[in-house]
Amino acid sequence: MNAHFRKRTGLTASLLCLATLSASLGACARAFAPSTDPTSPIAPRVQALVDANRHYPSWENFPAAPVDLPQAAQVAARVQALEGQGGALGGEVARIDWTLGDAETLAAETRAQVGAVPVSPDAARTEAEIDAFAQSLRDRAKAPPPIDRRPIE
Image (cartoon, rainbow, N blue to C red):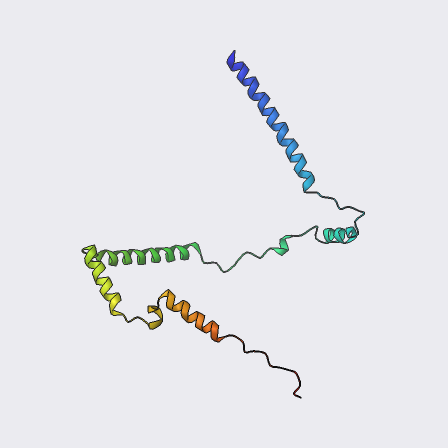
């Protein structure tokens, strides 16, 4: 008895869902066919634009299919060549002895290499020095006092 009730409930739910879906689509259909207010002052211009572009796009507006494409065999050969180069590169990488050693030793060597590079004086300035230099430039950039334009008596 429960199985019969479930079948009937499923059928009712399906019909209800179908009715809701058709009502929703019917409401959306009106949104895709809007009408122009005939009393509007721009209605003739809008209608002229709609009529002029009613058939756009057409197939002639789409680009033509390319004709100079390589054959599938050529593409496959290029792919195999690239895969071969990748395999050769992988073999070369595998032959490299990737020993980083102790992390502290590596850090010390890196610090020594960075310390050996001379630092420009501009990079060695502190933030306070940079701010003071910028303020001095601002002070120098002030305009001179205005010229007195009154006639000399």
